[in-house]
Image 1 (cartoon, rainbow, N blue to C red):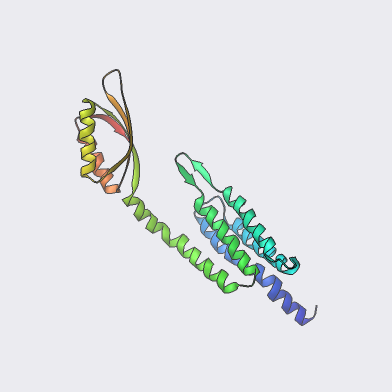
Image 2: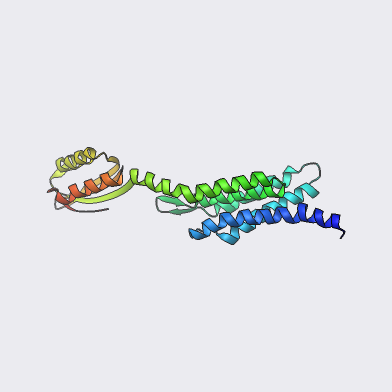
Length: 217
């Protein structure tokens, strides 16, 4: 290979792949640090593979260079779906699935030679991944959901008193279920939404309440 061919190879073949691998690796480090299902190597492969297919679509795609790129998006959609899991009432893996999709886009940008665009998106993604969890934790403190299971005496009148106490500390009752036992006690299950501080106030009320025989959350 002459110097011109070497320079062309470095700039048009090697550089896009390396740039995609670096970007994918940086995003993957954050996922690996948080012990997520898709980690460091996975994101490197996603970015590098997306860059490779994008480069191939430019070289061998003929008149329609978007065909392979569109198939990348479809394939990544299936890969992201595999990261989504249902854990009881919660759905886990949505963030990882979204980042897989984003990383593929970054790899495609690098493969197309749009290094500035791919680099900026990588930086913005890392800012969101590293800094936003702190904001989410603060929001969760303001919107914490708990499930209270209580055994109550005194009939439905006592339930109304407990409900009133809940309203006084700015908690919101999302759903409630109860049934009467043969002993006359009421067994209740309440889904409650509110701030962490409000929940703690409500717990203190339940501890001191003469109507509550026992409870847990």
